[in-house]
Length: 256
Image (cartoon, rainbow, N blue to C red; front, side, top):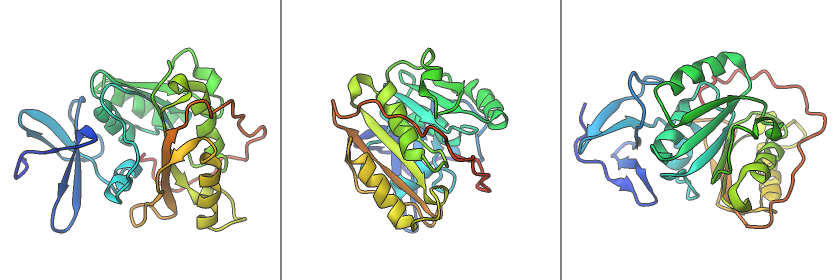
């Protein structure tokens, strides 16, 4: 399939193409990977460059962009630490966005999705899987150099603390970007979804210049996309919860 016209890269993300159609917005990433498709997405070429569709129903990052996320997006040449990579759906698109000179260090702690992530990485040379627990960022310190961004999609009650701990440990020069796909249903029943988001924003705002949060409905019920730019010198050591709550057995498909 060929697009009806040449893709035009997004101004702030040259490996991301956004097509506004009459009934929907389409996203495409210029890929560094090889077919077959990862999750049934479409592949095509534009001006001699390979692209694959970036489906908002299969990726929270894509859903956030479609819902007009105005914050940072992974860019060419950057290194990103991806927490909760699962089988690599979104991680492969982040690898596309950072391009062949960038790197994505993809952390996943469950063996079954990690095995699929390993297979996927054979076709994405800049995607580096790491079997590890995001609650213990020091455990994979020998595998991850300083990075420019941390992306987290971890359905845990302490997900904000986890992403901040990793950001304090790995962000280059204690600056850079933090992106968080927040699942409010995993944060307890003591507050509403909106209250959970406000608490998360308040905690993140101590360290980041936050962009306006984006609600991901109808693509992901009860999910919000948060993040922004770390203020240099503000992100000190952040300790994860000492006794983490039991891991939630989520019914959500592991399609991050």
